[in-house]
Image (cartoon, rainbow, N blue to C red):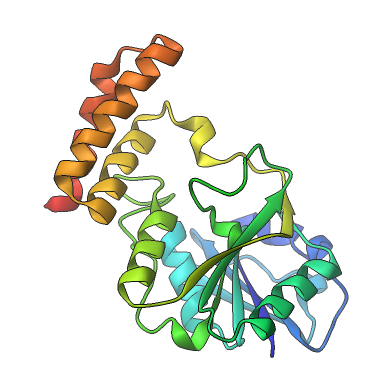
Length: 247
């Protein structure tokens, strides 16, 4: 059984990846998908390793980048990665051992250290997601969501997991750490209008329009109570997200 880490990055961020990779081992590979504007960057010498593959994709859009990586992947088990993650050898052992012990599991989300997040999770972040590649079928990240999309900037993980459930994949949570990251979670920037639109759109996609309207109203009123924020602009942005995903 082989593990392949799918690392999505952009432009000069490619230069920082060699220092993150662990020593070569026979059951782990790294696939790097690098988006660029203009000309693709040069591949650093530290990535010229037998266990590393680098692919380039013109343009922007994090979900486009992740789908590009999934299309190129060859590992038995793949892990969705950001370019600011770090790993320990035991993280890979935990991950692979989980899939060996549970051959019925298709998608497992784990834990990450270094972020302000309480487990078990109310929402799943990209760096926690792993899956059996051959059982994924046609499930891909919805490119209307996520960083670099035209109207929405988040919500892609919820939509991806929803599509995986609808496709019949067996999804489980494993309370063990598989990576370290210092990146902030999306929820910490929830005051942004694009994130508010994303909330409405993701709820509409996963639970339906009527439920989305109800949940968004509760969310906006909750922020008014907790942080004394005018709920009307927030709720309006969420409704725009619902309209966008229904159109």
